[in-house]
Image (cartoon, rainbow, N blue to C red; front, side, top):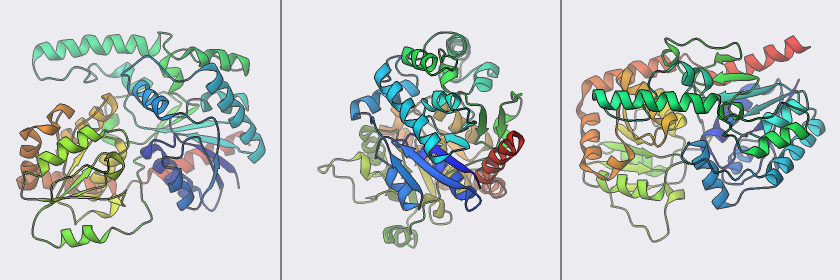
Length: 410
């Protein structure tokens, strides 16, 4: 039995749930310990029955927002100061030694890139393919400039080339990572890719997302990993599903905004549908949505197959994969390049439609949902993708990859 230390960013819902699924797959052969700094979704770890170590220093709300923008490539400013990075590396190194962890498994907890290596423990990163080193290096157009015309395509190629250079060569990583890495005796982290590449990178994608790409030796595909919350569906969902009115799922994860929720809900209110929307964490107490939009807390979306007719999603991998596995056609509005990639992959499979976030508050969203509800081709594609997902188990494959590495080290 090995102790595995899981380090998700605990204010990122997809990362927390992805790590929980891998930890479940590791039981009972291994012991899982979770580390986190913010308490946004840490409760899900405890509810799943895992040991959780709440650590300091935590980020303020403003620092979290800035970290999210940095991760999404919307700013070069970062909240990672020398004091923050150094303190977190110290905490993580101490916990690795205290628990006897033989492997560290992360989401995008960048300080683990230093702490695990300083302790000589193999580092595993369960990660989408988009914006990884091989995807950026080998993709001619990353969709940074949207559009279908020749001018847009040309502009996207130029933007992609600039990003590729900056990603791999420019010293854009917060300087604290270089200084703290050096102080801990590991190679300094200077480029963006150095912050996003572990010893072993486990790609949580379907086979078709890797067609035409060659993977470096430190990368392997494990397959989709998404939340399976161990809670019952709210009674409102089953009641609405029993009605003859079409039921639409509005899922916007943890990286959207109140403004996007309100815009999308307003458009869905114009349709003859019912909407179940686990978006309560975005809303203020004085927000009033239309009667056909039923707001809930987070719910076990993997159980919505056969109950929901269509979905409106932000494009995060977790929400996209959940819809795919449930056979639900969806419209996706990617908020940043990785999410745009997730949606575009499904558009290519035929089970999704793509819009921009700016279109959330326009009739284009209502039109897209009408098409989801009436297009037999979209439904057939959603069924085909669901069947492909049924034979995948990314969490189990991740554990197998970890075990193989540990066995080789032994």
